[in-house]
Length: 410
Image (cartoon, rainbow, N blue to C red; front, top):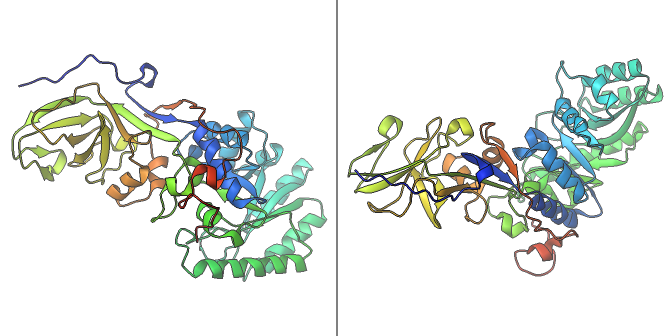
């Protein structure tokens, strides 16, 4: 048996056995690029779910350095982490449960999304602290998740106006969330915007005219200028990924901010018919060499991924067999190979040409899930490349699909 080993040190010593390398410069670039599409609208950067897996504090600081106006989190607990890190920018948190600490949120000057039932709890917290709560009322225009239905909207407005008159609430915004903006040709977005405009009219009848009307997510920011209003709330685009099935990050002028990498843990030759991993769902059809990659579904690698790409020694290879808890296997394609134990493996990102979307396709899911599921066993290593201009990149500087003037990607 041939033992393939090599003492070459190809992995950065600080990166341990596996790492998600985060480039704040890419986040800054992406924020500026998106801002150039939506100006003069303000930009709220979503840093929920640990900054889409990139590290919430790292992402928040980079976004603010690039001129982001607001930060957004799903939960108050996430917003409190940012405050404890010394971040004082405006923050909106919008997804609450009975266990949400509204008083702590008000004490840390965190704005709160209100969909209905929370309004009484928030008002009580404001009364106990003797300070008004800054709130954004959410209307469900068709997504069917959080938010108040248009039928119940007048009652929510009545309560908000009542609490506002008592000095317990200050309605700073009215918002909604788009369901199919990543499919720009679908009519449901037009229908949602029509409901949203009706909600604004009803709010004005209750003398509620907030400064911030916000609707657009990342796909809406790029494809629906009529949804920009006063502010956009962007997530996946900030981290350098496209929300569209038919447009890449490069098409949009975005740069991925995460490179997921490790090193080869083992290399061995196997004969024709060798089965691979649990269930023996794959057998090689020729003598070949296999590389063992020391990451698995416990690290966030999707168990269901089939023939997913990796980059080793300047070549693209594919996974074979089932992903296990801690490892998966790559077929190197030839019995003799130059790949050695210790060679760097790029799962996605960097100069590999492999995107999170490629792993999403292999797993029957989306790039959002791939980047947010990377587990705690994978350290985040921040390496600022400095490859951002420090100025508004703009669609032209970032590279529009046609290399010419800005165009809305509708």
